[in-house]
Image (cartoon, rainbow, N blue to C red; front, top):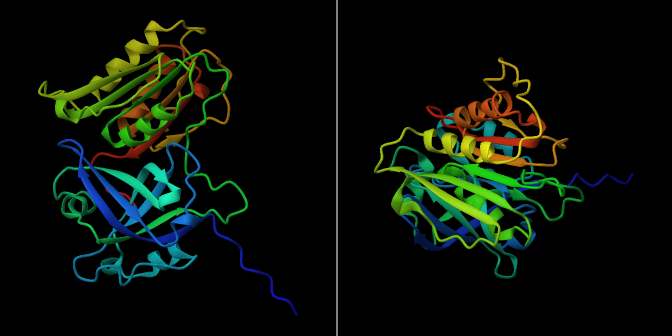
Length: 300
């Protein structure tokens, strides 16, 4: 009897090693990673997400799952032995060199990823969970899919969305008008970003003005939408019981005038979508929003 071949996973573990570390700004640090199997790592979108499994101080990566059923293996470990797992965006991929760049937001030793990045050095090892080039179908893990007929693009996020937004902006084709709004911790975190004609990039540093998190981004997004021609009256808001909805990406939009992509702290982007729909009349199907993190919680 011929046994069926095991299914090919859409995502798989990749052993990775640090080759370069570059401090970009006070809050951003770039880690370049390589791995022997990176030829099979297949980022498919400009905001492609991967997971990074970090070494623990006591056991390093010795318990880290390496098999195709990696998540079940990870969950089966005693909690104290689980390697911290965090989600990041592939800032840049160089398949010919088997390299990727991952940009970390630094906030001291308050989280395992920031603490690891602060001390990362050439030769340090991690495990990535990333899209598998051998998988025969779409692997997913990215949300930047604007309608081809959108007259204007609005791209906005906080510092956790900066790597994805920068990759998106650099890849925008000529002739796609876009407004880009990025809230960052301080003025020194403004990054050099090359944008094509018709793409307007505005950085919104919270310091030294001591602005509350999300306040500058919300005000700038609302002002930007008010400046655009509005095709509809204020619309039906998302249901009031959607407070736990952290992620919503429409399959298609009926409004060809604007497509909005919002990412950052979940409470901020959820409230912002409500306001755009309720007050400014945007079609909720024209707004993709992603809660990359939630204040007060750590997530895998």
